[in-house]
Image 1: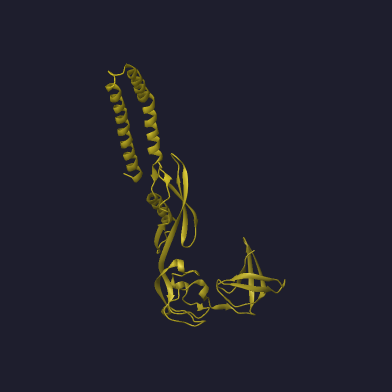
Image 2: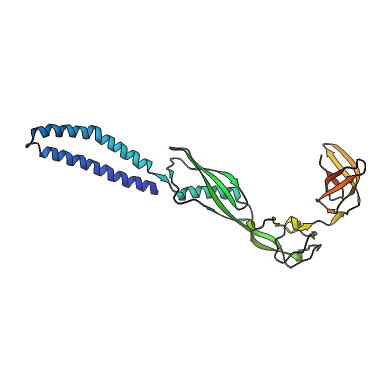
Length: 277
C-alpha cells in the first residue's frame, strides 16, 4: 500500500468511527433526559433528526473530500518514472550509464489515478530534464532534472608523444573514462587514429579526439588541385591552388584559377577537393 493510501485509510477509519460515536452519545444524552424535561425531549428529537439527516452526511462528505485531497504522489514514484525515461533516452551500446533524479523531498503533487507519463524535455552531456505528467483526477506536470553519469572504454595515449607523430597500434590503449569530463569528445575505434598524425604534443593517458589528430597530407599549400562540384548527375570540374595543407576528409581552402574566387572544400581519398553547392 502506498504512503498516501495508508494515510487515507487511517484518516477515514478515525473519522468514520468517531463521528458515529458522537452522534450515538448525543442520542443517548437526549434520551436520558426525556423523563425530566418534556420540552427538552422535543428539542432532542429535533437535534437527532438534524444530526442524522443533515449534519452527518455533510460531515461524512467533508471527511471523504479531505482524505482524498490529502493523497499525494510520492517523490520516489515520480523520480523512478523520470529516471526510467532518462535511461531509455541516453542508453547506448558500450556505455555504462547511471542516472539519478534531483527532486526536492518537500515536493507534493496530487495523487494520480493513471500511470504517470514521461517525456524528455531537454538534454545536455551530463543532465536531462524529464517532463512527468498526470492526466487524472487532477492534471499536473512536473519537470524533473536527472543527472546522468556516462563512462566507457576510450582510446588514450600509452605514452607521451610529440607533434606530427604517426600513430600506430603501439601508441594507443583503452581506459575507462567519465564521458562527461571529455569536453573535446572521444574515440573508441583504433581505425580512427592509426595512420594519422598528432596535431600537437600530448601526454600519456590523454583521451584522443578528432581535434588531436589529422590525416597525412594529401595536399600541400601551393599545390595545384582539381575542384569538383556535383549537382545530381551533373559534375563540374575546375583547377585551383591549395591555400593550406590537408589530408583526407579534411577541409581546405582553394583559389579557383578561372574565377579567382576562394572556395572551401573537402579533400577526398583520391586527392580531389569536393565543393558543396
